Image (cartoon, rainbow, N blue to C red; front, side, top):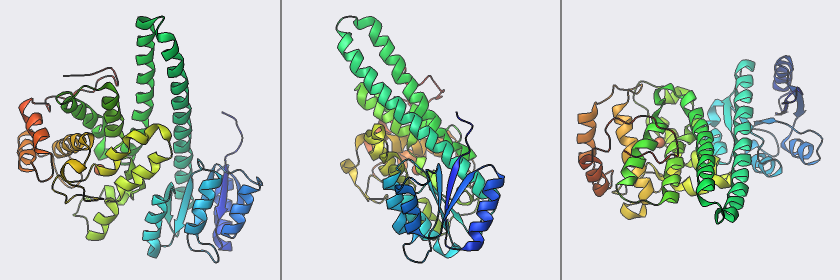
Length: 363
Ligand SMILES: [Fe+2]
């Protein structure tokens, strides 16, 4: 890594905010540039005048608003994270911006410490995405090479290929853990959902490609919670209708985040649809029965079981017996009845131990 300062573009039409942010960020070691309008920000970036590692973007500005400018910035620099600055009254615009590819949003008045923390988080996340793209490209290249050689040295090369798949899944697991870092109550949840889902899958089919898509999708199903305010994820009281509406955006936010990386395409239905209900009363699309892909239905059962048997801020674990009863009661309502039957009959839920990823864990 180079020792060069990381660069932040501050886009805000309020001179006072420009001043406070410039000062705070310079003190924290960032190199900064200021754009007073959205047009200026776009010109600066397209002209190559400034190559930021992260962009701060005010939503409410004279002329082009932050929401207008966001797609232009994303087009010019797709991997550069954009953090929106919103007024409290614009919370909905903040959420909209996440759907359009913003990395985060901060509600004004913002403290320098919070901005700096958010910038660090955004740059770290960008680095993971870049690394993932690189690994995926490397994987594709290597895979092509292996396929060519496979005829000559099948046995030996097959094990190398498995090795490489394992490395990739490990990277994705790290990405999934970025959400668990934000919400400590979900620690281990994504990995347990993966293991439970794989067991259930193994009762129904045995296609290695499909099984791998399931593993990635299960690990990443809640990645969109990155875009949900932490106060909401940690809330102990019942959520208000408005808060529920915001929380329920996490599947589409997750889909949006992952859709920027080709490698994740096959998992997108799992991320988008894991809260659909078998009877059509789920979200975000109200899909019904077999309209919901089978892999998604598998993840829904695994996700619900693990959520019910873990302690969450708003309630204790229900315990295995109650959780199983709830699954049974949800047959044909929330869940695919056949999958629930299999899950119960084969005791697929028994002691899920974290196992090395991608090694064909079965149990
Ligand atoms: Fe979820």
